[in-house]
Each structure stands twice: as structure tokens, then as C-alpha cells.
Amino acid sequence: MTTIVAILLFGGFFIYTVSLFYKDAKINRNGTVLNAKVENMRAISANESGSTNIVYTLSVEFSDGPRQVNGSGIIPTFYASQLEPGKEIRIKYLDDKNISFIFRE
Image 1 (spheres, rainbow, N blue to C red):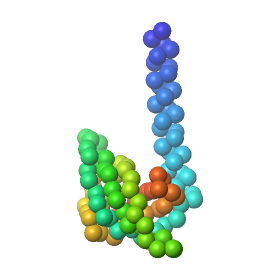
Image 2: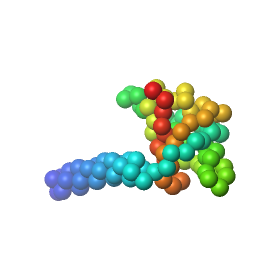
Image 3: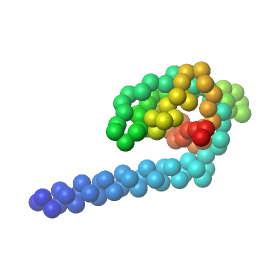
């Protein structure tokens, strides 16, 4: 019984990790680079590995005009200062649920 539970837990973790890599690859392959203005950004939590969970509101410049996009994600804490409200940032946009930030080095 414990072996089955261990296999299910490991399998679930493996599938979750693969889905994250697939999502990133899909955004990089099919996403469009757009300019966005940070309207609101709130850090929810941080962990010891240097990542911060955030909730954000962006004003994204689409070809047919600006539109607000809300979402959440995980970013490296080192780049959190680039997401302060009022700052401009470049994003790679696939749809409202699939956005990645392009940080300045």
C-alpha cells in the first residue's frame, strides 16, 4: 500500500514538473513580445531558494489598444524591483494565463 502511494506521489510530482517545462516552452515558441506597464504588484510569499510568488495587474499594449491583464506567478526575488507599479516591462504573451516576464540583466 505504501509503495503505491509513493509511486502516485512521485508520478504526480513528475507530471507537474513536466507540465511547467511544457508551458514555458510553449510561451517561448508561440508567444508575442509586448510592452506592459505594471499597474499593481503584490508579493504573496517568498521562499529560501530566492523566488517570490506574486499577484500582478498589467496594462498591456496590444495592436488594437491597451488592455488590463491580471495574473499570478513566481519570479526570482532579484528581479522584483523591475515590477514596481508604474514601471514599464517587456513580456512574452501567449494568452492571459500564459505570460512570462523578460527581465533586464
